[in-house]
Image (cartoon, rainbow, N blue to C red; front, top):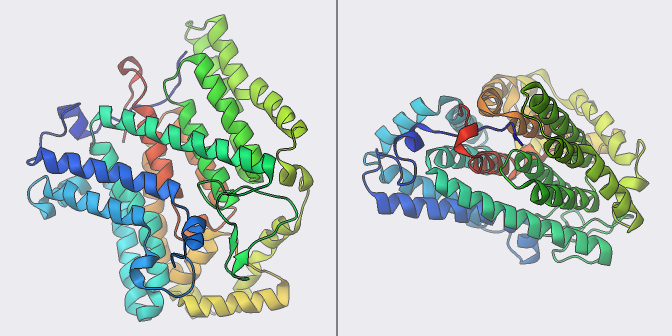
Length: 448
């Protein structure tokens, strides 16, 4: 059964598929770089901000030294990129060549770097928090993407198996936590400086915040649909991930993921029939994976007691109402601030006013938060870089990658995940690129 996905075939991989790129002058250094890259992405996934808060690390907690404010995974990825450049001789020339080869991806790196410089020059020390956010969320993703695209295909296949194991372990833990009403990682609340207590229990598992759990799981589900897997194995894993989404309690992520999975199944079945290579088994597996199985598992999981929050809030609740009110913050933003941005301190003051007058406790929209920090002038540059990065996946990706891109845009626009130190973009790139590498050579298409 065709998966309808793409395979990345970067210039480096074209020249030397399993032994590394021909422009590598120091192969051992390049292999060391790939080791740190895998370690960095795995660290971002496994070590959540909640876990670090529980360990007493001031990653998101107030206070602490600057080195604590940077995720260990970010350190590993930045080190990997330095080694990656040094392995190619002259780092400056290597960066120029990478920018030429991966212009749309690295556009986000350069645009974000410009935004960071702007914030630091304008705000000084007060710009540290937004600067760190932009580095960890956007710079890390761009650099990791380029290194994955330049890596041998065999390395990417191994990385996918690693990410599959991590996501399955997180899903299993989330389901266990939901059933037992216990957490491995404390659900830490910065406001009360203690564990958050909710009406409906939500697991934190390995990935941290329940909504972050759901988003990462949903992104992996989309990427996994495009990977090569035996039909029964694919059915089992898709079903397991769907149950995990229900347990994690992210309504938007689950709803969009289920809808896009059904779209994937319908498109794959239609393509197979139109091409005249459809088999009864292949079409049946696609339809089962996309609609029948998720629906059945959803019903079964509900009967087992999972998804309490989702079922209890299938209406316009306080969370949705807060999102509808968030545009009220513009009532407190001056024209100068709208054009040129404001410091994080000024932004917190505006949020406080909105909370007092309108009950807007948090601005759950990353577009608004980043616009407030940067101002419309620099925000336009930031948006150009982000759109270029996302467009590179959409333009050259196959069906599964495009569905993952749609999910990324919809879900991230409903929260502020991309306006804080976050692993979503890095996970999106890592999952889609490595999943594509599992597809057989016969079904290769053009890639980024």
